[in-house]
Image 1 (cartoon, one colour):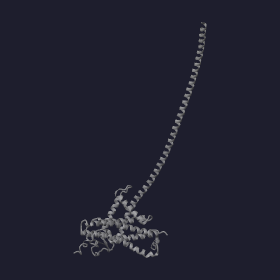
Image 2: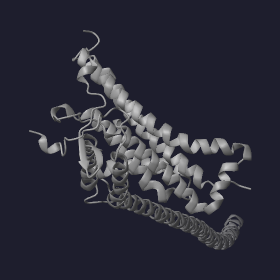
Image 3: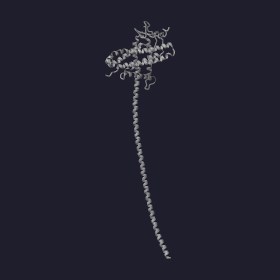
Image 4: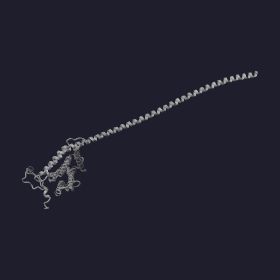
Length: 239
Length: 155
């Protein structure tokens, strides 16, 4: 009896499959990501509808966010190149943050799917790997477009002994980025689900608050690391 | 009820936590699209607004500083003028006081001189009249004594 007690209800690893041609898609990830993106865009559109010099209400919030993201990007990428990458870093941060919090705060259980269940889009490995690969592409593009082939000097600095490690790093960066985010968010959802299943009242609350905290931290970590990698790629070492 | 969500039930894959499929590239495309949309709707306009405000604040700060400097200059100027005026009025007062003093002394000296001369002349007059009176008196006394002598001698 104990063996099939809690996890049977949690539907881990079940997906709502959509088929387009030969391709399989995880429908629940797209549905929840569209809801989350819709909410984000709604806030942005409402907040920037009438921009004033004395900011009020939503505009204030959006300017605070913009300022926060700019500081993050400028600190990590540097004064010269941060403007080009501000939208990318900001989108990563906002998308991950809103996804994580949406996964924790929106009562997804009210919407029943024939298979799988809705949740944070970032709790699906596909999403996090997509984001991490975008970061990899971004820093390669940033380095190559700014320094041309001299970008590859980075692999032999400060000494050529570093070459294998730097090559391995190119693989570990997306791996760690994607699995860190995926693992944290999925684990948070599982902990809350298991606790809620065992003791439906009060007990899951601390785990939920912790989950909100972790969610915010993970969004910040992902955006900061992405900015740091890009900054590393565009950094001009002084000869 | 939700059958529309299941676009195709046939050949449903087994699933699992690490089930990678076309979700990955599509999600990547979606995020890139979101980047462009957010750039147009959020980062550009808000950045513009913030930077415009920063520019506005720095220019009005500079203007205010300039105005303050001007006010300070004017204040110093006025203070100098005030000091000058005070000094002038002081000297005018001193001059007037000296003038009054001088006039007073002159008038006093004149009055004293006049009084002296009048006193002198009246004294001389008195002296002359006294002399005259004494002279008349002497003559009378002489005459009387001569008369007395005559009478006495005539007896």
